[in-house]
Length: 175
Image 1 (cartoon, rainbow, N blue to C red):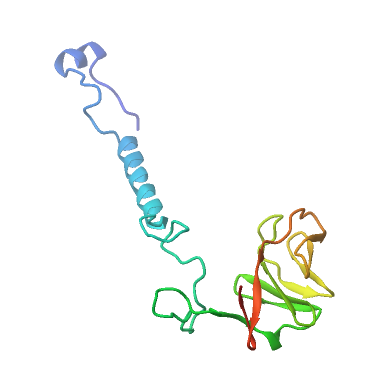
Image 2 (cartoon, one colour; image 1 turned 90 degrees about the horizontal axis):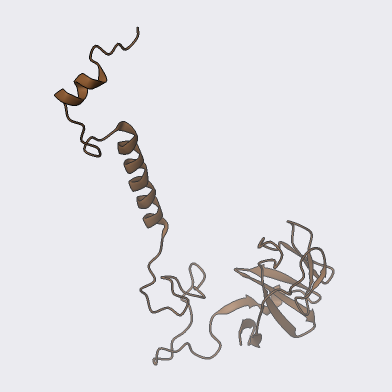
């Protein structure tokens, strides 16, 4: 079946004046609905930057681990000396380390503790193993020193970001 036009273009223009832009086409309606849907999805995925956190998000820079009470408050709004334990010192082997939260906590020599970001500086993968004095990234096989965080092999050329830590009793805490 074919669509047959029974009137000529001349007849159409005299009987029904053309009004450009007044009729909605199916394509226009679909594009508008798609654009509205995309805007809703993007708005739902965004976060507000109206908070007073220093990092400009609604989230804390260093949230307390699930199930913990967080940093102890001394009544002035400041965390009490020592802060939240990042790891128990007995859990960090000498010449090795552990991955806790966002950090790799190492003990290169007895009684000396270091902490580094667990995010590889090459492609942003999380490191996953500490062995033989090396922190290893599984994505491209970069390796980092447990003492300095500097890359020792692989494509990474920058050191892991260090977080200063200290021993507070039996716990390792941020310094």
